[in-house]
Image 1 (spheres, rainbow, N blue to C red):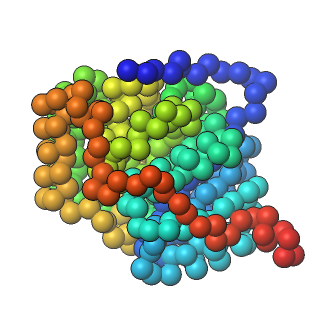
Image 2 (cartoon, rainbow, N blue to C red):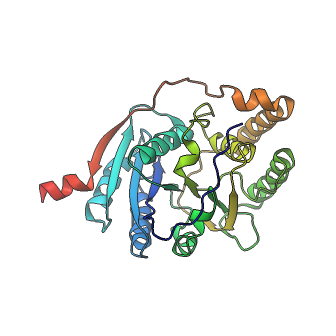
Image 3 (tube, rainbow, N blue to C red):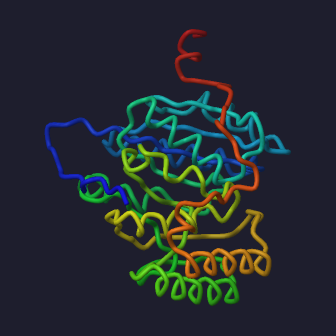
Length: 283
């Protein structure tokens, strides 16, 4: 089991951070998310922004391009996946992009504007991100604030958090919120590529992080639901999580070495739609 050494702070090194925003049918919210990115960039942290559209069926791509064109961002890209890869597939595109472009860390902020970058900015300013492999936003950790989140979903998530914690052998306060940070180098050996490309990707990922002995820190976040439409159906998602856990418990070695994608891909190509350099050249 390959394990990279934990990072150590280096005050003279320039740490580059990429904010990755996965989008699917987020036309109404993406402008607000880009505004969040602007405010975070103004906090004195070296940030760039990557928006990835996963073949949305609404006007997300147009809305994203419009928002980026007027945003005060140091550098930004807008990509569209060449196929619908699912949420996990978009993560794989982003992690590969970050590695190819020399980013040390990737912040994941979902494009439906449920999470808040303001929750992680103080940790970045304090340099907490260089001390761990992952900073994981937690909706169910003491200090977190849930707005508009149903009691049923809250209870279900808390139960699954406890079950996954028991299986993983460490306390997990969230199995995959829409605000996380990862050190890019932990994906260098591509151990994550065989994980499912759908909404269960985060469940595989957190089990994989523990399995590979990565250093994790959870932090409480604000999470809200107002005009968003969830892509996860509670019953079917719960069944998939139970099947996933059964595989992990039944044969851990086979689970982490196995192929979990319904469509096995050699690559996850995406098309560049807009880059801040394009806007500068056209000005």
